[in-house]
Length: 325
Ligand SMILES: [Zn+2]
Ligand SMILES: [Zn+2]
Image 1 (cartoon, rainbow, N blue to C red):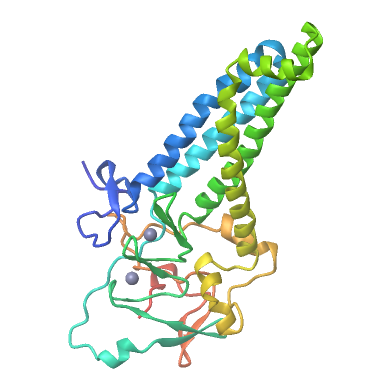
Image 2 (image 1 turned 120 degrees about the vertical axis):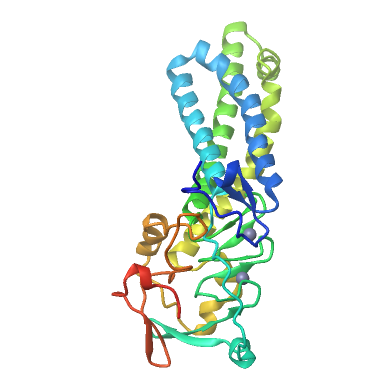
């Protein structure tokens, strides 16, 4: 069995965990992501029968389309969760220890100009690399990650250049799923109560109680409470990340105030094209795959980089030469 397409577990020095013979990589806190997946599965097992059995039997024209929409959202949420959980966020392989190095040079930050804006480049003592712009060292995974956003404790993985769109898809799909779950649960309970009221001549209170008792709708109460909490959280994250993409900042850069200090964001495009770039630009290859032979990292965006007047990278630099000297 070859190692084609698998992560290079043997030479890896960070805290990440490898699974399925090197096909998956997660953070060291891998249980959190599994618990999140189990929570979605348990909530789904309570939600689908209680919300849909009666609705499909009595009102199939409304019940079946709502069931299909709900199922698609749950499947999409779990798929994006598993993919973001198990993929390389953009880990930069460790560099070689430089022998007889001049400590002063490595202690001092290098100043580079990215599209004319001065930014600092730091040497990572742990990873033994000059850390590229937008990368940061994750203290949990103990690696530098390209275009590091944050380490997500619920996902059990860093969110970085390679899995950001998966993370955003998971968060925004889950927010939509929570709204649909709350809506369909309420619809199912209320519709049933109205039918009991009309058919059996019950008053509103008795009809609502009958609606709960006759179809196990009590199990929708914990599901709706969970959906309200999770929906508020993922809804907030969806709008926060739309804002971050719009201004072309990562969570890490926003909280550190990277571009407030620099005076200007050298990567910012015009408004919505920043969002399009974040979601649809080409995903770089994983640098920790066994069959990867390119540079150990690449510049974060299409940009021109100079250092003391020397061009380190330009728009015309070939893809294979995009590592720093
Ligand atoms: Zn590092
Ligand atoms: Zn991490």
